[in-house]
Length: 529
Image 1: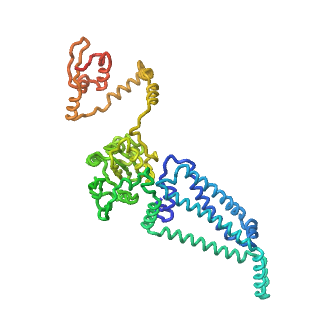
Image 2: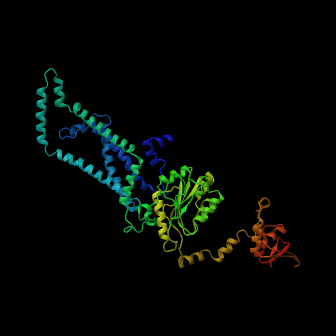
Image 3: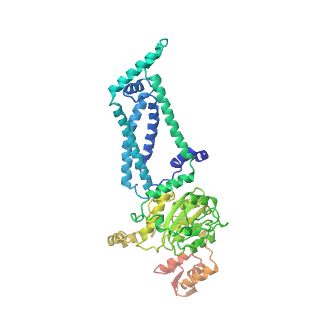
């Protein structure tokens, strides 16, 4: 695996075939691109092989084809494979274009990919048309070419001395000896030129290639006036008026380069006040400019910093696994960034994929980044803008921890009256009583009762601090306990103290308080004071 990622050519193949992250909702329609690649490889191999034996002249074209079909080993197979693959090539191309039109692959942020595909399609049509045009043009002057070839053969025959009559025979009746050698040399030169171009492209500086594709992406990116529905990076990011006001963050030194939308500077929560090497490389490779970067997520001061820094803010966040470099992207409305952090990485009530990853790699191997700040307070009216911003990052970065590939939210959604009526009808009082009576008067076996008793006795009781007990006492109502003869057994300031003195659980006391008889363990009657 290390060799696949270190070799310059195999690294490209590995990034597209093995390590390429793909969304989970792909169908068989996404196989057309790979099928076209297979067809292209077949066409190149069979075409180069046929070019070594084919003579593109009016006089010898038919004879060369017959030579391929009859004399060349498996020549008939190579020719038919080349011919049928060419037809399949165009058939799959049209299916591939139809799939792209149906799913809207020409829209942002995939406009550049679509334009490159159209250019390849036009080049393919031009190549096929020029092939037929060459054949048609060669057939215009058939008679004139025959006369010229006859004269040339006569001249070559007269020049050759008589002691070598077999050379005269080869020149007059065989095209193999000279033509095939020339075709082979021409084919070898073509293959060497293609290989040279590949080596030159691999040897180019990575920064030059990134600048080139960035310029193409900027050129084909739609303007904000024409594409207001797509909220790209430039839509919410501040644009300085002068060159001196531009901020270019340096992730390789320290973390004092985090600016929010108000221009304030923020700091990373790493112990050494700088981002780790893995995180720095990830930010540079993805061309991100995060507002906040947090590491050491298991520390209490990190959680406190996230709460304080993101209070009253909304935007896009990223959760990175620094071991596998997998990541998750999500959006948070106003004052909910810390809640999203807690639900995903602390309480595990968010993404199940992140929950399993945190349990496997531990929370210390994760980083939390706020990569974009939404400049407005999120309401029902502008919530669509926040979702469009999240959708941009989902489609441009392609996070493999995200199950859904499109942003969505139930914020501000209201059920219709018809839906509410159906919900009430499906959960009527009759159904509630039926569900409540499922375990009513149900008799358990002695073994089950013993297991339940052992489980209850071995239950770990929570240990509360003095301050917590005082807070519970303030919010709890006092309880009075009666004997069965209505004499007072005792008064307690809270449910917890009542359960502790009566040697039962808090749930048992609450259950008795909610019942009509108020009977507790068949010995006491409990009630609020």
